Length: 70
Image (tube, rainbow, N blue to C red; front, side):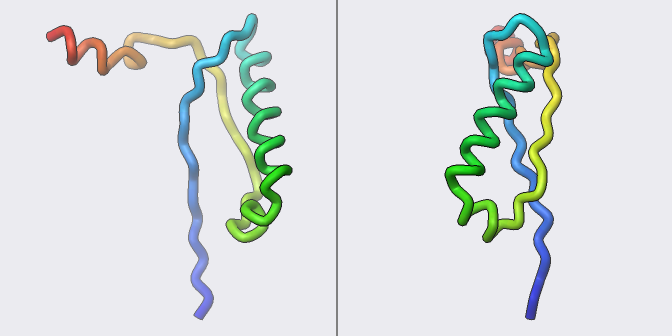
């Protein structure tokens, strides 16, 4: 029996860059390189897209520090 699995990999990278667009491009290049070098992995898992959005850190990004300081 064939069963389809829709999967998502979630992560947050901290990148030194001048603009959000530059940071996005740097991550995209690294992930594209990884997927190209691991073709059998992307083929067997049916990877079709890589998506991400750069943003400036906010107060929610330091939640662990806030909890530790309480």
